[in-house]
Length: 151
Image (cartoon, rainbow, N blue to C red; front, side, top):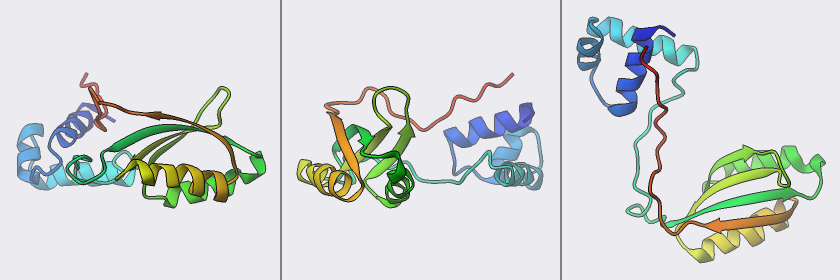
């Protein structure tokens, strides 16, 4: 990635709905050249897609929890990961070092739904031996914006 690519990424992270003309002006390129830059970044997998930033509370998903998961048996890993990828309440799944196997970021509309996810989905159906759950009381910062260095 060159400096123009990094500048384009930073601009799109800040304002993903800007027009090609606006991006081109910021980069010192024509609108088609700016569009081509972005398309190349998509083709290379640097940009995975575009999405709206939704306020979870306003959308009815106020319960945020981080769940550490330990699998019963590592032979269940593939099935666990496949199910996690398809579960709408699980926003992130990270393979971690330490006493647990995975860390999940979960958003639910209620504590009852979180309980169902933990008790039924994870422990009963997915071969999870143990979970440790931290309920989030408030959030000081939450972003998906990657800090792009503009050298």
